Image 1 (spheres, helix red, strand yellow):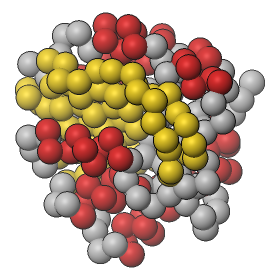
Image 2 (cartoon, rainbow, N blue to C red; image 1 turned 60 degrees about the vertical axis):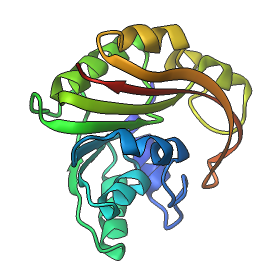
Image 3 (cartoon, helix red, strand yellow; image 1 turned 120 degrees about the vertical axis):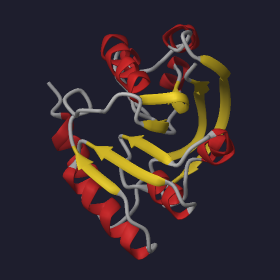
Length: 201
């Protein structure tokens, strides 16, 4: 059985930014849909997204399971002259206040459908009315690619599952795309992704 915390700690325990230092491109494109300043970045890894948002003036909270990732975010934020609220935590155990965040960023955070459903409901409850979720994940078609993502198809998503999971929100965008990733050494090349923007009613 995979020890995920150990895996991610080992992955981020390097001076190199394995997913790059630049923000995710879909986040950059979708960021104007945020209607407030308090943003949560889940599974924020090395901090490329959280730090970018903090530099734009958002009040950012970043959560990651790996302490090496949190340490990297802290150092990265300091070099960029910003501060971020940091938590090394299991997403399933971390307490999220109800109606608290104006936006939640979920970039390549992958779980099976059962666990995803639990987390999605938790995220939605923590959003304020009119709060926005920006979500990019690998689709099941990614299993054929070598550009990153889980090698277990049960940890990849299909479009119908994502649509149904957020059907109680106003879906601004939800579609599957074929893109070319250029995000550090571990995200390079053709990728099949699902991109969602959804607003809490």
